Image (cartoon, rainbow, N blue to C red; front, side, top):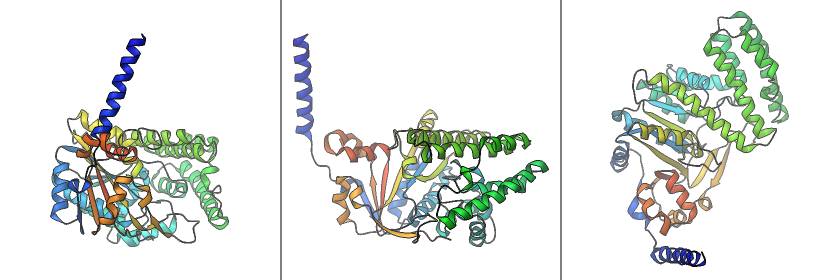
Length: 400
């Protein structure tokens, strides 16, 4: 036994020595390029090649910068010949439907502003003019918009209003009118007193939820009401019981089930529906995310493989610049940021050399060098995403 253990240790030491001896610095310049504009043919050709035989494409975004919407719009246009017509975003289904309805109108920006004025901060990531350029483009190209996330915490006003306007069941309509008034008052209290615990979500209880389910008469209404309870549970894990893993995992599972509802319906017309996702960077990562869950992106990557296709995962981050906070309690809705120290050391070395607006790094071919050449932080990026896009002097999106 001692001899075997000694032999094992010798092999292990030799292997470690060999890896260290082979370690060499890989120059990222051979795997990257810069463009000032996403209409540059170099960028278009790069994307086209990677879209071939793909089913799902993810844009993992830094929230609050307008270049992500510009990037997604450019990607959507390039992807049209490859069968991509659906955009999936980080909202619930009702918010996505409202966005699509507004984008199809003759004055989308004006109508989006009206919705925001009536239900302020109900749709947190898309209350801006820049993303509506993307949404109107999707609609003009006869595309669809899916919303797979939980209902936002101050969105109850909007969802109650939606069901009131769409239901034909008068008892349900009457009850929801009462609840909408409560939700509006709760939001005003939250804004006036800067109280995170004042929104109606914290008043929505199990009895109220069950009462609404008894009044609902069709499957769609029942599903919309159940989504309210799902978000109540998810926020409670974060704000009340501090069970952060449950918060992230339950939300991830909800996004998967919401996506599959859309997906199964789409399969009735096309056996392999193609979707572009615009989500927070963590939601777009393959494998175990930094919140220790296997998110919607990982499920989609495996689903594509079962269809003999693949998924494509971009992460788009600003280097420095300004971002919109999306926080109704902050005195300044736009703040400066500097991400330089947050990037892996290999990327930090490249930053001073970047001269154009967009820096594009192809991560996929770097994987064969990952274990002998790169830091642990960079390895995580290499295996979670396929392409890193850095934005120089990022701008905050133009909020309503």
